[in-house]
Picture 1 (tube, rainbow, N blue to C red):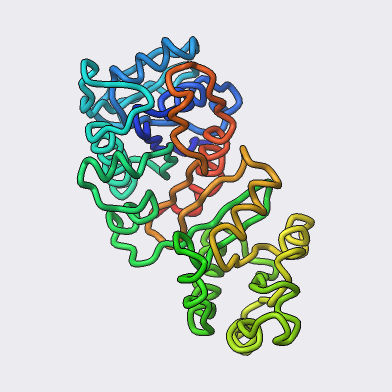
Picture 2: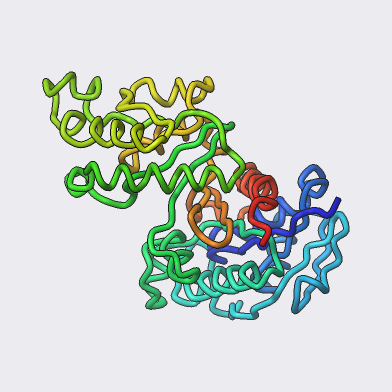
Length: 332
């Protein structure tokens, strides 16, 4: 059976992305389930091979079809966009920000063109993007814009527990304005479709509560009474298998035990804390609702340890593994 081909971006060259990509390509278990085509810079990758000491052979190609997909071979599309005379590890850099964006852009195009089956991304630095005058908040917004997707869905998967996010990068005050019945209905509908696309067709989605004990019928807040519960009731009438609001202090534990197939988290930290406490290294971000599949590590560029050869690659390997797991559902 043919293995899926995952386009792997190098991330910000000044961060740990190159190192964790090299370590992932060298992983024998990962090689058994998927092939990878890395999009990056040859000089940066060669440096990362030297730093990590991994037994990997670099093979530069111009198209994934030219790749040599044998164990221990790192197939690379070289965009040649880093000047090593100006390069520094751990530094905010317009050059690196621009390069990181170009790796993403190329990987998206490869996948849209059917030359790769999914994309797995490594960390980027928002300040470096800004320095390069690339005005996106992060990966999700870039993928949305470049795939023509108005509002991509973010889903975390951690040891089988799936968490969607109603809101992401908003202050808590701004988030409260988004806890509306219509928005919750829209998200549950789209999240359900996203799960079906991933092959998840059975089970109940839980909508997390917002206030302590889901508000105790207005004692601790009215969002559950006025917005969340009415949305859940409307969804049930529409035929959706959904429950809630379920108190946030228990819903993630119950989901981890298998009671629910997923949770709709209402805000950024509500879901992030739950998943990362369960297993920080294996919390993987999956961007849904697009014509292509994208998975990603959910840690940063780790500028403080970049270039030292000590960065762990567990999260990167897991991101590639999940991309390979779900890629067959995205075959067009």
